[in-house]
Amino acid sequence: MSQENVKDAMMKIITGIQENPSSSKVFFRAETQWEEDVRCSAKVRDFPPMVIDEPPVLGGQDAGHNPVELVLVALGTCQEIMYSAYASVMGVSIDTVKVNVKGNLDLKGMFGLDETVPAGFNDVNFQTTIESSADDDALLKLVEAAESNCPVLDMLTRQVPVSGTVTINGRDMNSLVKKSA
Image 1 (tube, rainbow, N blue to C red):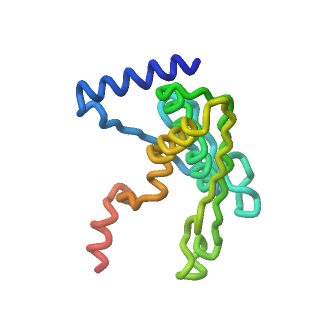
Image 2: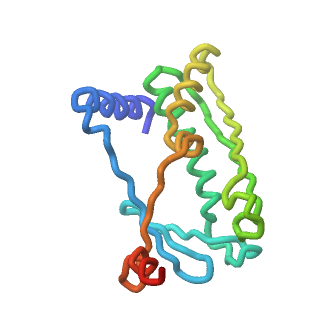
Image 3: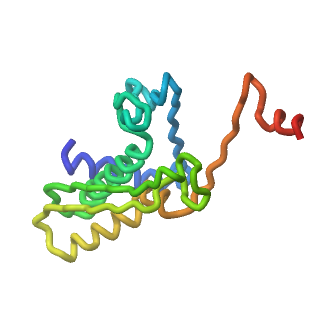
């Protein structure tokens, strides 16, 4: 798809939302399933299932990316997509966009060995490299637009409400907790 096709798609979405603001609400879904050991599968839309696994040091067979790596991949690729989308709309020519993302995780938190250590990343750092013939002013505006509107960067830097339920043997976990209390 050319940058012009990306621009056409973006402008069609923007115009549609401007004409019908309620059309801005969208829904994404993923279905995951534990397979064996620490290997899982994930299904998104009509794509073939992807394998999620851990490296051997964490009990896996290294059959796929692990969940925290997928978070890093999501951040990097979301940034790249936002750069492409905004560049097309803003008329900024870009040759390449690459994002190198790193996350530091202390396994003591994941294994519950130290309650003061979080289970997830302690910090995430990304380095974006852009090659472009555009002037610095246009590129700085592009950086501001892409980074301030990247959904994954937003989710990682803002406290997002997350909720869930657990069903055990066909029963809602909340009903089991109430019986044992």
